[in-house]
Length: 291
Ligand code: AMP
Image (cartoon, rainbow, N blue to C red):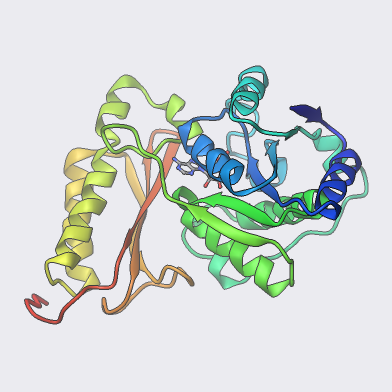
């Protein structure tokens, strides 16, 4: 595995590989790697001749009061995990080289990025879209691998790739969870022991919502009221930033459950925010409708 800090070097390697008929897979991360990241890395490894993983804590996607400075970092361990997973190119650019003095152009995603995470974290998806486009332009991969864990991010990036005619294919990998259901996240290390015990209440709430839809409920308000009560009872968060049932592509709230949908939630324990989501397939039959 080659450790690369200069974008030009990675681009040259990737171009050479693709010119000789190989495919290149790319997994962008902010490091502090866990089994969720490794699921993306393993899938990309299986599906491509060459695999690039980037580790870059992107300052542009953090708000001024967010956790950029204290975001967990462990590059030595990340290098080892990537090497063990068969990564070819470990890309760890410095912030100064991606954003040199005079850097001023950014990507502004559309309305999809203004809702939910975008409303709570203004400018977040502009930062994400900008860095992902820069990385795509350096790596020039055939396929970009993203996690369902960050469903809104995946939708925003998909839309960017489509709208700006980037040739990369986007693959979204299912969320990897701990045994008690909590979605793996680099930010879980911020949780106190008590918060960690309560946190799976969020996914239990979302699963109850999915079960209600499967059993015939069609009114999002009824479903969401029950999910909210369950999350309040079991996770006992300091606040629920949002809880919604949305269209999986546009992230718009649904007025009625007819096709496939997505339950999304963000909760807070003190300063720690956790997000999660659960895709719900299109309900099968109209029998047993319960309002
Ligand atoms: P991050 O390092 O948090 O920016 O995440 C890098 C990539 O890993 C993103 O595409 C995430 O959606 C994905 N990811 C993070 N956590 C998980 C998880 N628990 N399961 C699947 N993918 C994940």
